[in-house]
Length: 346
Image (tube, rainbow, N blue to C red; front, top):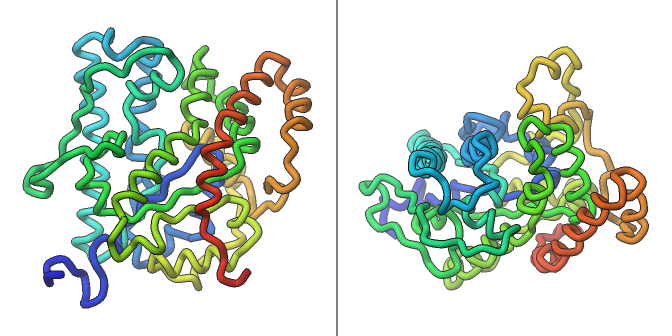
């Protein structure tokens, strides 16, 4: 290892760059609040709630009502607009990580795994259509990344060479908790989703996205110094019930365990009401809480019992959709759960 590849005599730059990949409603905001990223002096702060660099592009897909059409049928000006939106997300993500390195700080980026995939792949998830020729050939500056390629297992928007500058963590949560919670949030955000809630639910709640990224990273890390400990998988249940695991993870990524927070002040109602709708939709549960809620565990979850409750809450048709999405996610969830990090204290 050359001196140009290190931030000090022991630390490779990759050990200061972390991707925290999540599923919506997986308690990711809780995890970041406990890690207290905003008050960790060694972490460079991203611009908005820890990352979400591809969220603006994804919201633009919804705003322009493009999800309802195959990408091949999009007008050329819309294709160009959307490619530029995703390229801007990648550019901003890279700039943040580069600025963090220049400042000698840790880069910690939170992103929903599904947002790292193209609109073509999102439609293919819910419609029986070919992805077709890719228009999503996103590029980074050639001076920083002279080689930009995609290996077979990398199905994301991002080149291998960029992904491989990060160490990945995957946060998961039982689909039986994720899917109905996400549907409730989507109902309260109809201005974003319109009549397209069910297709968006099937896309956003699919555990195939983080599994695909896990398998890519597990393969790319083989034979490296990181193979034994990475990728990391954290289960929300473990974060909620085992503070020692969170401390262990904090030490792994080089942040101060003494600064972890397990209690905090809730946001005042007046302050909450003036927030942007996107923030309310994504962060309301956390913002109005005062700490960890252990009633959010999946222990004892019975899908048949919960499906009956969903029929009462949502009606039979929607309950069936939710149950189908949950069942369809279980195989990937169980695979990822089998890889999860466990506390050394256990």
